[in-house]
Image (cartoon, rainbow, N blue to C red; front, top):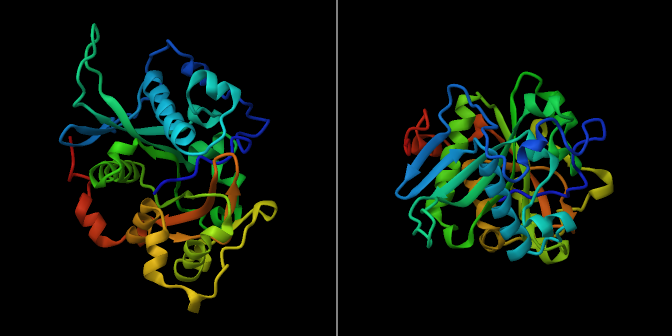
Length: 310
């Protein structure tokens, strides 16, 4: 379920500007409340020492940005801008309008002359359709033509997931389960109907990814009513192998664990992949209507997201 960071060039349109209203809230040293979730408690759940919550302060969001930098730029092969190198944070204009889910580890030893502070070990970025429409549209539109998809479902509420990452030592079932618990609680609160976003396969050579891409194309393509295509100028064919040449078991093994998780939940995929050279990934579009989620996962987290309630 690791969504592509996408290319920062595909940011907010010029009419919105590179610093939308509220962007100054992310200036270091301004640790004030920048998110009020009303009746939704920001603390969404807990397993042992791990807590999943929504970011409420500028500092919370900066910590998510630092985690993204560590994973995308230091561990993986993304190419940072000069500003990112200086700040050691992965930042774009959408951070100012999105909500941010954090997983924190409270089992942290105090450092000399400092009190123990929970460690941010996982994050997801959430953009609701009503917010996107007020700020120039979804981020995904930089890779996929999603306008027909949105137009075909005018009565449904879409939620875009992005900028997902987990610190390496925490890439386990417990952390991913908490992230999904947080997303499910958020989806229920906002009565979301459809989740979508771009999922990443590591590497920029589609031929080297022929098996997993072809598997997604032949075995997990979205139905016509949920389809969207990669933008023509960014389109890369996914059907690199014929269906009869695919070993499904080997293909599943070749998929990133988080994309396999999406398949288990009930997600399907758009047409065409997109090579993102800045981030060193090949991206595919994930579409997950809430109505298509495997019932056993709803039972697992609880119909009111109460399984891991704090």
